[in-house]
Image (cartoon, rainbow, N blue to C red):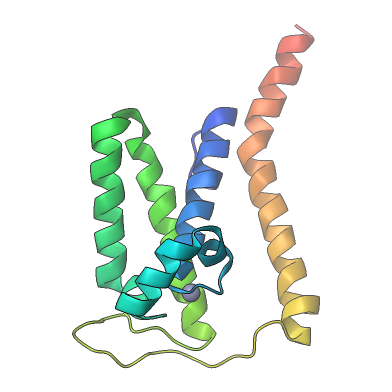
Length: 158
Ligand SMILES: [Zn+2]
């Protein structure tokens, strides 16, 4: 949303593309939210590629971004601008997984996971990080939507 042009439909599309990019890496786990949605595909990917390997690396991200680019270019070239929020969402997943167990950023060249092993869903996350993230999201949404809402209100009263 922070990168979206000030247009309501674009802000929604950017948010959706970012969310899609943010959940896609976990398609390599049948137990993940996205893995349960496409269980058969996720089973195959987890069996062949493994969880937190290719799909949690720069090479996997580049491959999926290239695939999305090709599909958009063929079927919906006008939506190519959504590649940026998709990439930001994907990258944010890798960064957050880096602090929650580590990811193999340079897989398959370097198979070792790099990162921290911070406990997830603990008291600090629930009572400190989540409220901070909600405030940041609301702040971002406000700044993305304020020009549109302000323009709409001024149009109504002019
Ligand atoms: Zn993940």
